Image (tube, rainbow, N blue to C red):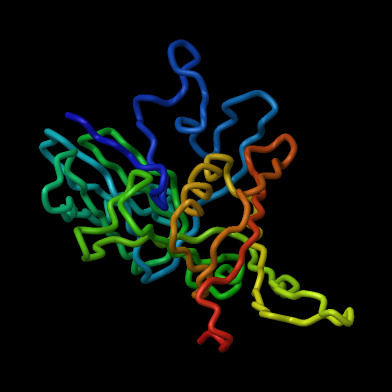
Length: 272
């Protein structure tokens, strides 16, 4: 049996048998779960990944020689704090035609109730971080929506089967999309009389994405997302102009991340 778990997944899965035990497994980016102080002085914050009611949570696994490919979803009873099985996700094989690698499974879960959940891939012993599903406006205002895909299959994800797109990423992070001063790429020259003559001017619309108070394990996920060729934030297409800048919150397992953006598909009309 073999299973590969992409870093690009909008929800993080950890190998349940690979959590740190300080003998043969020590804490790292991929095995440090939420809500645990795995290293002295790096205090665990009570944080959850956020998702939105009635919006798909889509992710992938690559599998080979595995008997049960389904993933179970568990939901917490808010009165007792006890989790019970809520839903079973049956995957779709999205391996491209002629694919010779491991089978690529697409999983989709659309939460129809608010609350705290986690997922368990029992056959592969992968368990997800607990995540919180919202529908209240006061919580939704804390989030930014990020959609993404790449022009070719890469970064551990399969987006295309030839010319047909069969996957796109959708995720949410706490943060703000801030609009910056506009820029302008100007081509000009001085005339014989010393006057500046403009040949061409290209207005550029800039923004800054501030992702705030997220677990340090999100650093790789965010960096991978912004490696994709097509990115939309709050419904507007952008592309990053620099690598994400990470600011660690002292004595905490949380970080803030800043990403400079430039709007793509700038056709000089307002976006709907």
